[in-house]
Image 1 (tube, rainbow, N blue to C red):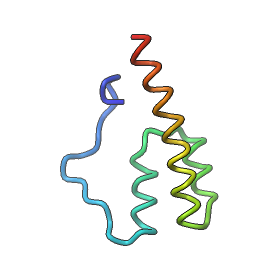
Image 2 (image 1 turned 90 degrees about the vertical axis):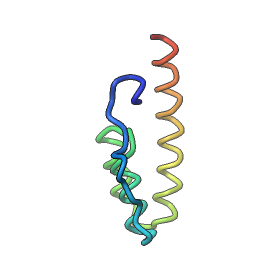
Image 3 (image 1 turned 120 degrees about the vertical axis):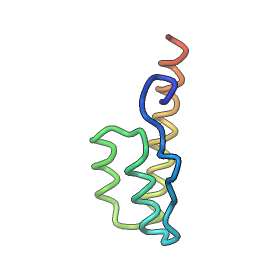
Length: 71
């Protein structure tokens, strides 16, 4: 998304060693919209939340690539 002018991750970002905190950090820093983030908030299980995050990020990547190709 930085190629489209959106800000990237801070250079000094450090992912938590606690997996349940790390998955929330990844969700918060992801290029997802508010509805997708809300969907992540409703998942109680960390492994399921990460699976959903991967799915949503894959979809977001496809959209971002299409936007870049379109100019």
